[in-house]
Length: 372
Image (tube, rainbow, N blue to C red; front, side, top):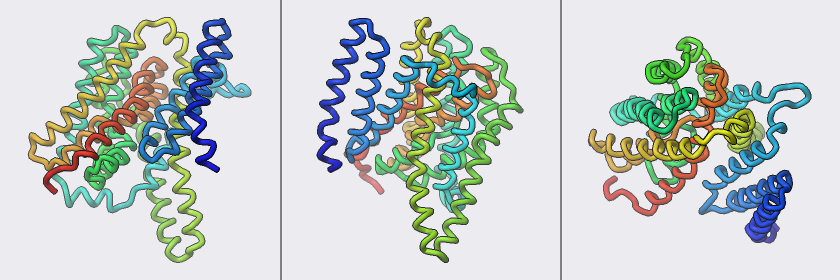
């Protein structure tokens, strides 16, 4: 049954797109927006059911939420007197808790079995992306808050999606998970340090406030998820019924994380909608994000090769360096920098890095390393 209706989704999506164009031309903006959202939703569901292209489904769903925020911004501002931007930090904490449930103590102990590769990867992570963000901020925009957002996303640790992309690319998944865990643990120090150093001339960066925010927003939920994972694992061995329940919960967490990221991006977009429509900087930001991401891949790979890491490890480091924790950057922009504009670059970076990471992983998957 699932395959029966799924094959009609692309046609329905194209039809909805045509109706959106007709509505736009005829001046029916709300109608055009509704059909455009339906277009993205159809293709999102279709790609989500595809083994080959499922990695692109997330980006399409992000586009659906962005379209909804642009055409119907009030839907993501206030509900029954409650400002939805207050949900950004809790939603990020949920995402980080989900990440913690996928970790074990072995992921941190593994650093002692491959210290050189982990150290090289983390050094490249915080040496490349913040400075590339600064360089792009100096050339791509004159708005200080947008520039601060570019530096901020570059100063964050690797994103959760990097582990999935490393797996799809046939990389060293153990190295990827360990790098993500370790770079996240040192983020309370490195992210405020690099942001204040490189973005302090654009906006006021409160070092200690950002450090505390990262600990509350990132570290505490991850540790909580790690503890829960340990408890459920031990309990599952003694009680098989409980193991089935915990397994079902674990499988549902990626969906919750995906929805949370989409909702966060929709809130940020709705808050910045007027500035996005009036300003001519959107294309410049998108171009800067593409370059930021691509340079991260390029320098991450060749930096790892320069230090004589294997081809497999170099690919893993490249993905880890190129993919950032955009959700964390968005939360810090709103919570610490108090700027919706600073949250725009990470909000764009997140969806794009998933698309580019999936394409790079697919390309590498078809070209396995010659050495093991």
